[in-house]
Amino acid sequence: MILVTGATGQYGSKAIDHLLNKGVKPSEISALVRNAANAHHLTSRGIEVKVGDYTDYNSLVTAFQGVEKLLLVSSNDRQAVENRTAQHITVIKAAKAANVKHIVYTSFVRKTNFENSSIAAFQNSHAQTEACLIASGVDYTILQNGIYLEMIPVFTGEKVAETGIILFPAGDGKASYVLREELAEAAAHVLTTEGHEEKIYSLTNSASVSFEEIAKVIGSHLGKDVEYQSPEVGVFESKMKQFGVPDLYIGMFTMWALAQAQGSMDVLNDTLERFLARKPTTMAQFIARVY
Image: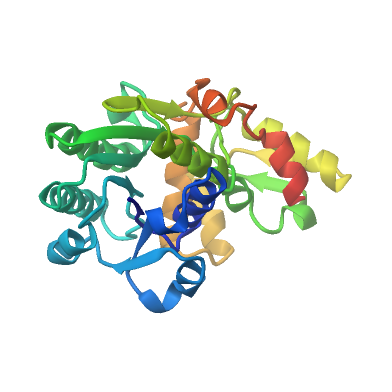
């Protein structure tokens, strides 16, 4: 039995789709959700739905009974990153108590000097989870996923077609953006093939891109010039406030922009290509779909 956590989310739901596409029977897949009322689309396909919460150890131990392989999709808790770490550790402990044989964890791409990055706290949460998983004694596979291509439209802003300007303080830094669905497909590959125990995989694209490049590609599809501007952080935050962007999002945008400026996500690896048996979707191909 394979259990997928976060099964109604965008990553978890795609992982289930790809497990089915790879020939796994619905009866061999179970899905962990917080609210069964949101999972009718899973039960209608013959997938067993189990209710549990990352903060409720007992509910997880019950849900994990009879599970051989567990896809632990990292928490999307929007509070302090320490909450995510605690939740992941709770899941790992519950999985061990329930005799789960293999845990596949969705981590995040990381360089050796990540402590100096603007996203150090976020990456440290994953590093601590990885350490707990490795020390647990349960067979593990760690998927260090690259940043999603789907974040590009979020960073460029919904009015880029109207204004012809991308305002984002990422400098000339590059990042290796990858399609979320292809990362989910790679997870399904790991869950359905052998030889992945005690492995850490970096799942990134074959090329990194800057926002200068992104602006040019968007402009080519809009049929107009798109200018990329990388202001000082204080100027950027001031402009975001003028635009009425909530402080929470301003902080998030600044954090990720600086991470790209620092090269924190500029990691290239061919593992994803090998798992997919094809080239991953490029930034240009993704932009063509969106714009």
